[in-house]
Image (cartoon, rainbow, N blue to C red; front, side, top):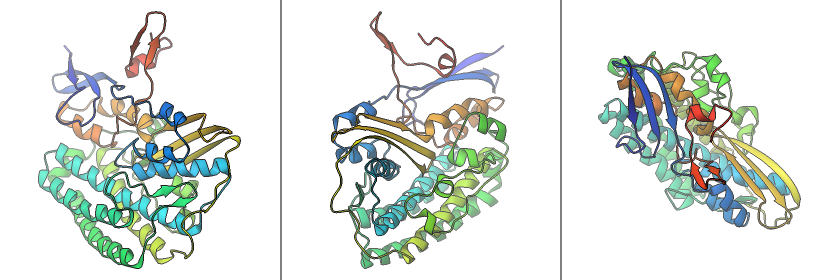
Length: 384
């Protein structure tokens, strides 16, 4: 006899609202459904009421943890729309900030993951060491969140010799800390017992569900926008793309661990080869009627922006597809057959962002009612 276990939409372990309905038999999960849509902020629509430059700061508000990811992707898409290229030094600075933000995001995720399995000592250690990456961002950008580093045609802040010295010192501290994180993940038997062979997403399912980022690479899908479609200064640096084949929580953890080391490698190369010259263009052309598409490898996976112009200084359409939009679909296949106790770490293993997922509210104009939809409802032809 099965029963329904509701989780959310408001729950002490979830900082964002999401509702999960798990069908359980004793402790085993045999079915389920989930529902988002509690925090739709209308950012795509608001973007059509603001200038191209003002939207840089709006894009940063899509997600606080990966705000530079969004402003970089948005700026590059507008630059493609205007048919311009930022100076080489700006491309390198974007890469350095981008990868530093990836380090702080992944260390934040490691802390959350440790907390979800009750390993709070490791959680506090990882968040303490994350401060080194945040210090690096603050030294260049002047802020710790919503960094405001990007502008159309370049960046707003330069990396001075003094800042470079601080960043190199912090990188050494981070590398030491990441080595310790790797030792915890690889050698702690209790931790491995909680995450090995748990929440498996097969390679076929990963492809079918179109998951991206560490979620895809943890299931053996070899994809990374930085390598496959280089932007900023990624075509000038050498790095590897970590891949794991087992598709479980441990595999997704190991992928992020490998990415931490690769981010340090990328930053050091970019700082060593940082070209001299201006950091932004002095003049920008007026937008013409056109459209452009841009993508970057965000910390959670491939992020897409589409922008259409109408010849004014306000975009006619801005479309954003965040990594979580597709990654969230993998939650249900991963929890089926697992126990209730494993659900928190399985959900956390894809590093979900529910706020940047919410896009659509279904409106029945005849009845004057609106509603959000569950995953199973969206899978049907009729949603009202």
